Length: 225
Length: 215
Image 1 (cartoon, helix red, strand yellow):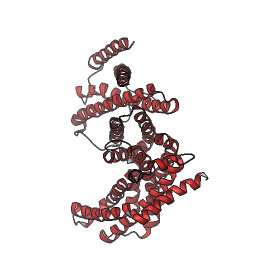
Image 2: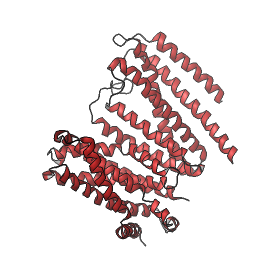
Image 3: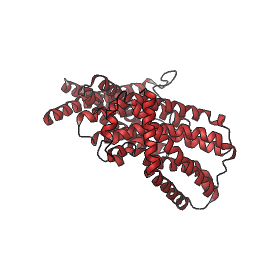
């Protein structure tokens, strides 16, 4: 099987398992609904204050659900006793990484679309002209989160206190992505064009390239038994 | 050899202390508080040295699979985190009387704080893995990811307004202050870099003894 076919096989397997069991997706959908309550209760009903913090809160929602979703990437393989099978796959192990990354990206984008929808309805965001630019920022930001998240999930799957360690490792490394996405989202929601946040978009692009390349190069090392 | 290095470090630290209090002039507006700079700047710069060494040692480990490189990375991580933590603390102590606040989310303070938590995570990861070979592999990967993340952190945080003094040593055009400030600073910088090397040498030796005791 070619490299791309092997990566696709892993992604396809993950998505098929998720589509049939909806284990992670169901929990994430419910979790994002709960987040809505949390945000509403902590921020209060003041419309102006809400509008000011909305971009940050939106990304907080994305990140919290990402932490839950990404952390499970390789735990499901353990739970279902598939870890060894995955390791036995022939050829370059980075194909497994790419497949897992694609699966994670798809899952996260579904959840993020849902969170965004909930925000539009409950917090009355006017997406309007901001939507195309916002899609670019969300796509790039999510790729960055998922790229490092998938690598770290593979690392933390084999250590003690993994549920604790995963966010503790991921969050500091992801600060550039968080800053860039929140600032860009803020400007876009204020009606500025995508060109006005060009520097943030470039930073996100650079981050995505760095994260994906480093992960591809080091994934082999992480999976060594 | 390590012992000689220790004495050399002690001498350099003593000389630095004498120069910071004896040779360096009392700053006109800030007063004696400013002298904390002679500890603060060397601590932060020495921690940068530690993190660069950590990244290089991580890479060397992945290529050569030599646990000695991993021990250097491990020790550098510990010393680097301690130095950067002390650097933040001394900066805070200086900031309270000078800026009127212990902490502010200015660009350079924020980058250094991110560095601190990033490498604190690195030490946490080490602490949770028992198998030394696996710990070395995972930490090497994290060390490389963290090093490559530093420029991204720098640029993302830079696009905020900054309240910090512009760098006084390493800046375009070179140092412009008087030599009565420069020499005490340089002597202290040397002293703290020696201290870093000494700590790493001691710690790496201890880590090797530990590994041998277990094996």
